[in-house]
Image (cartoon, rainbow, N blue to C red):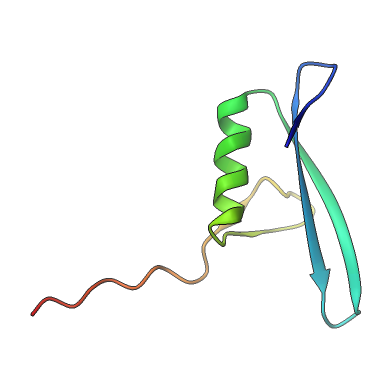
Length: 69
């Protein structure tokens, strides 16, 4: 994540496409630092992003809930 000269925050995402055996990079810009940090940490925690709108993200695998005794 970096702060740009135009006052926006840019988050870089590196990912692979196994079927094509390609390594790709995409970046997403945010106006607010809080939004950029939320996006960054969601990706770190395992969220998936969707192209062409990379700001959309979701968690496909929900964390397991503990089973009560």
